[in-house]
Length: 163
Image (cartoon, rainbow, N blue to C red; front, side, top):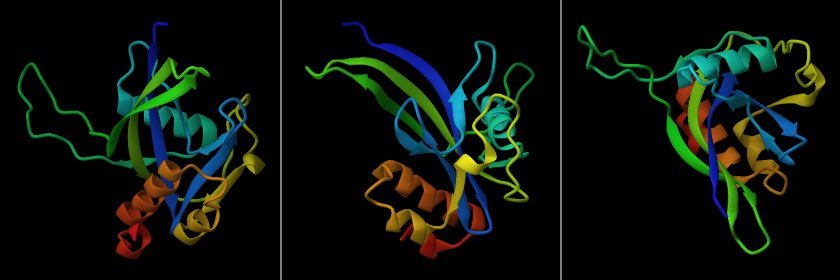
């Protein structure tokens, strides 16, 4: 079986000590905003687009830039994490589909979710603090909990959130 791979961008959006998650019906798990990177799109651009589409919010990415800028190259915002995620695993252990995920952290100015038409309704989104993430360990993937805590700590500067 050949494994197909798609490039995606994800953003752990933070406001006032909490990150936004929704239940993804197709993948049957809780996830932050994100989605596939268009063919001619840069990862950080896809990340901000996905947040705007899914939450209706403008996000400021917490993404360091490199220091190599010349007349022919320029640094782009770097993700906090670069992950390979198994999406479709068969019963015999073969991986049919993977996501190559550029994971960013970002700050937004409010929790007023207003998705564009065709996206999940605003009521499907929940804002979870680090304590909320820990309290829901039975239903949230461990990586989502860990990255959510790290995003809150990074964006809000609260080192207790990452403990």
